[in-house]
Length: 412
Image 1 (spheres, rainbow, N blue to C red):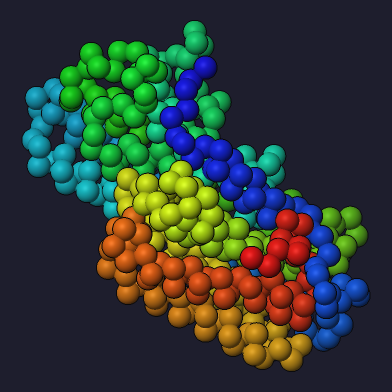
Image 2 (cartoon, rainbow, N blue to C red; image 1 turned 60 degrees about the vertical axis):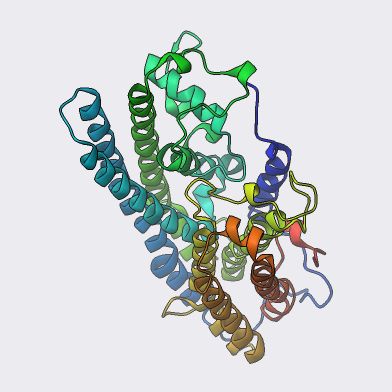
């Protein structure tokens, strides 16, 4: 059995459970002040809210991710061809540098699109315990040693005597997290403990290692694209989840009322609490236990090879803001205004904007800031907490919504 080097594995399992649970298909009752009628009983057009968020926020987010994933596949292929040309002595190193830079930029673009979609974990992204989501991006479960093994498995074309099939491999071996390692890690040594070294890796020349890694990166990128296509198809199909939301309250629909569908969409907002605030900020800060104990721990940040952690958090907030405000159409803030809670609508929107601005003012990576200026990251954490505290109280109370099951009574 493959040894798992990553000391964060246990903590990652916990966060992945929380991520899945907080966005699960069921909700539990909210705390004190919850409206037992389970609706606001106003004339607000909830179907118009559902339709705008579905058609003008969520669907474009998924489609943008697909477009970026398609572009990523092509640029990773281009990069790999440049590495192969060096191996065949038909290319120049400058072409490799140009190609890897383009592939890295495109990975960041693809990750930005995905991090916004992460705030819209609904329907197909939650089915089968979030399998499709995890195949695209398995964070917080990441395993670079397992990726090293699959580089060689893919090169030989088989695993344990069976043909290699990336669709059958566990999520921690593929997806956007694997590409973070394959495209940005310049260390050609494997990342496993010496006693569990991938067989044959040390016998390869440096250029053969680069080609082996980029070949697998091409396969990973193609798999991400295929999963993105599956997501869009399942979401937009005639019997897909988008139409289920927009047909809420009709006979045979899984949503008995329009308010039930509104509640399901609102569940997605809680990613900002369980994953962004707790996993991406509180854990590296040491507010929650990490592999360093209870101190700031730069090696526990998300996307550590690309140092893209703050950009990920930024795009989580952008996705949250689009759902909250409706991105130019009808949003949750309009619903809050309709029920007379102007202060929550204004404060939440302003807090999101202020937090986005605070992140944009950071001129270094999250890992560097944890070492050199942890107070700035603590402030960003506090800013996000202000948003999620209000999400778990005034927001759900005013709109007569139910908290996701694992958030009920959670006032951290």
